[in-house]
Image 1 (spheres, rainbow, N blue to C red):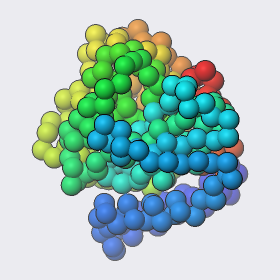
Image 2 (image 1 turned 30 degrees about the horizontal axis):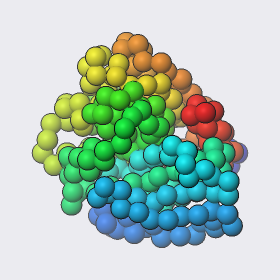
Image 3 (image 1 turned 120 degrees about the vertical axis):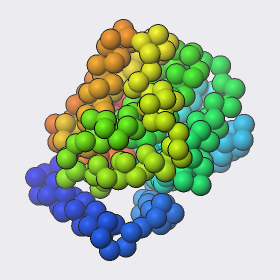
Length: 287
């Protein structure tokens, strides 16, 4: 993106944070409505196909494109959104771009959201799906937390693509202590707030909640991992910490650090060149 575009988005982030903290005090349900309303503006390609199923009790959208092979193993994408908002709809553009490149369906579980459904509702819902492994799982932001925690529960050698994952929910974790917020619509106060909504009183040090704290033996049950973040986003510190932990556990790891991108850039491959590059890298990793 151009420097001008970066400054425009940074200014937007500052305005949203000010409104949220000092004016409107928006609740998660309001952010859900706002995110889905914006997502409805997405002009889908003519060959994008979306259908909904009940996947062992988990409402799930299946995204495919012309030429997608329904017999091929699907890619499972666990969407982000602070455990409290976003949906399969907000991730259709990214899922559709990956489906077009890979020729595979992308499945987007609509897991239960906090604070109405705090931990362990989302993770237990995913864990109840009886899928023989290994499988391919993508998770972005808070979805990266759920994707990694689910794979650690499964112990099936799942292959993971983690995009700017939020994997440390401790109030004194590196990202929670970070002052980097120009490139995120959220800041460290929001991390603490939404972590609290998701945890619902449970300890953030449990590996289910902060999977970066899982043991080396548990991490070693993972398959190959692709880890991506931007060097100037709020959750970059989480990615760095997870990279260190995966290296210690001997997990095969591919890392990419985008030099300048806003948190969540991966969701807009039709608009942002860095998002298109992410889709291409994830496709290569999963091929």
